[in-house]
Image 1 (tube, rainbow, N blue to C red):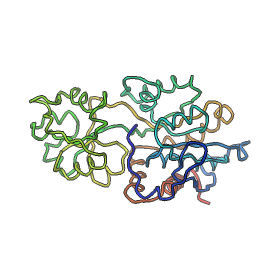
Image 2: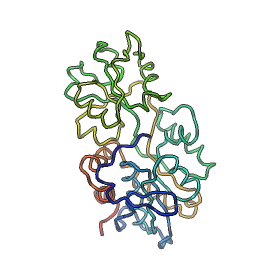
Image 3: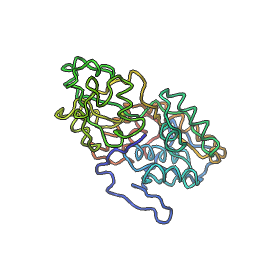
Length: 327
């Protein structure tokens, strides 16, 4: 995806990488020894550069990649904190970075210029993988984690709202209960709020749908707060791996008609780099199978809510999974 979450406290050590046009939130990469991730024969400190965008989840994923590749024997340059999707993509295309974690839907729509995303996760991954091959970028198999759009309700209101569990259930509620908080980007996207309501049979601005007065346009953080308070809306737009879902005890509604595109997380690597060191695929084959929505909600929450450093959160997780050993 998508719109970044706020990073509380973790950018205190922000440093700029002079001359390269990229920014790093924190170039520190904790050293780690191999465990399930093994040292690669012949690497012997070969240089490799890891990129990541400048929001919480990306910073954590960037550190995970940097620590893992360091344990495998590479001399890692960490350029986590690239300010925006377009610069991060440019860094890969230009060969300034060798790898980064990316979202399948983001690449499909934002980078490859497709008009619509693909809801089926495997089909979306395969389409991106195949299309990006000609750009010299190899997409390794994706994680289960899918950071897509969703709507959530405060958990204590679920029963009050008839046990609402799916987006289709909203259509069964009285019109006055169909209240929404969304951010401005989602409200105006061609694949955003209004077509979503159309897909679920409750069109915006229609008497038997969702009256425009039922919709509040707020900043991202305010959407979470208003949804938790329940004073302006019953249903708030969220991102499915955001740590605030757990910390605010929100219940995410099932997208039972498969409206939202897939935004699975996957490692993308310069094909030339992967050709030289094909064992890089083995490194990420240890990582991606255990990256789930629940894992990222927890890790993102430790940074966004708990104020921990992404590098330490990443190392703790890798050690807890037996992927590396702490030095």
